[in-house]
Image (tube, rainbow, N blue to C red; front, side):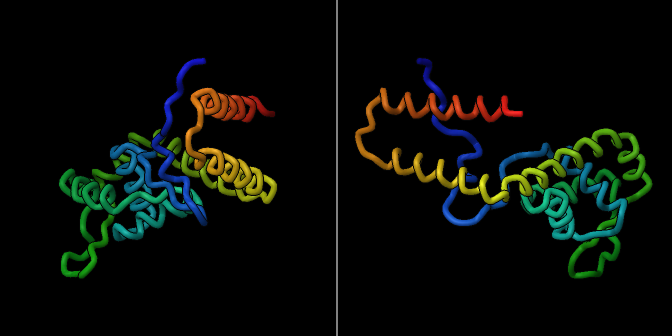
Amino acid sequence: MKPYPTSTSSDAQAGCGGRRKRREKMLEASEIRLLMLHFLEQRAAHGYELIKSVEELSKGEYSPSPGIIYPNLTLLEEMEAIQVVDAQATRKAYRLTPAGRAQLAEQRETVLSLIARLSSLAVLVNNRSIPAVEQAIHGLKVALNRRLAQEDISDAALQTLIQALHDAAEKITRSE
């Protein structure tokens, strides 16, 4: 039996209690900038409002961090793709410039693809909230955590557990 990796970047998403928003890197910085331009094309906005716009698009499943939004606002401003609406305001709101509109127009296909990708997360949220699906996921987590909390799990038992998880993943992938 071949060895399998023991952790993934999505491990941080597992947790006790309610669902947490995804913070792992789902989008490249250039993709975030395009989404920001897309939302600013619709109306002027603050950084926080842009974060909320992305969150709404994904039905709360993904939320970009302020650490990705604010530096990219600065970069877009330096690129003259956006400009501050009122420099005297306590919170900076930004609007699209003609250069930003041109950049957005050139990348329209990519923007539509990004919107579709984030919207698919909303479908995920809806399907995952089906009670039977929630119960099955919970049951799997409980069984897995209960087994992994045991001391001295043999290598054979661990490999059996890993293989069972991979088999389940494969069955789920092939389901119609």
